[in-house]
Length: 483
Image (cartoon, one colour):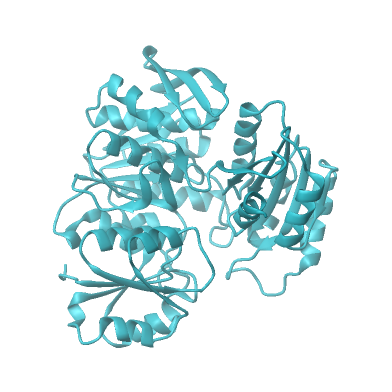
């Protein structure tokens, strides 16, 4: 591979791109990138890393950055958003002989390690749900154990270790493995097919990208391809409770597989789960033999199950049970995953979560209700993409049962959504939900949501949680920081 010295990130504020930019900067590359002016959750880690961010997309940005540097020392990484490889910056780079790759391909290049002059052992975490939490948990545990791993976690911060991207001195590279396409027109490969990990975790398989996949069978098929391309000495650690995972886990008979879950037929099984506030404790059995009790500082039965994958991995890496029990509670979660933002002036607890799929909404709500069984919960939900909402409508309708109040914001549209959507479609979404959740309302913008909550949701017996993959988290921030 060419000895690159300069790396440019088009769409640098996206959570996937920002983590790679931080890694590249820490590894000694000259780094810059471009994006829109809007504030993102990644602004902090990019600014802390002193990375040059150009606002707006124009060919003069990479032209100025690369200057007269030899073309073989320059690398251009493009997000799938903002027209992808058709963005004028990417077109300029390609026309001028500079290597242009997608974010998905870049993760595979970074995990391989040759670009850094070293060889990593890759740890990939795949699945429709839970990738970020599991990747953050692994990064936190390995860091606490002194392994100094490199990692690219799909958020902005991992608590308490800091930025979600890190270039470490250790031999492991931890990364989320996404089944979504790498680039809209020229690189339709699922991102994770660029990764060649020694360790693969598959937490679940679900239908989450109706703009890319026709049905669940197409989703299973790309997971089969991922498993089939694993090397013979790789290890897969998979959720044996998930029927879709069971259909793909045996595709590569040369790869050793460990299963985890709640069913007794798994190798690693969670038992005797108890949650107290935001902490939980549970027992882990391996082949029916107890490994002891483990503690987590994040709530929810789903997180106890998530941690089974981490426990199994750490054991395979040679970590003692006692050391695992010591480092697991140090993980405090990740940005935008049931994150406690603070309190309003009247004592309402405010949380924020990235949940944008019905299954994620249910699991997050269960964890929050388990932590605060006596409090009344209001959800502020912002759907992400009209395509997903339409495809999963019946599941969305039943996801909010049991909350005190549900506030719907207009859908956060994707660039891949058709241009002809309108507020009427959001109104129809609300009416469908009203059949099972009567206390639901559509409020047309975030400012009005904040005013409504400040006036109507008051007191320490209340919780507000903002949910969605768009910019709904700004509501939580405004409620806590309101003058």
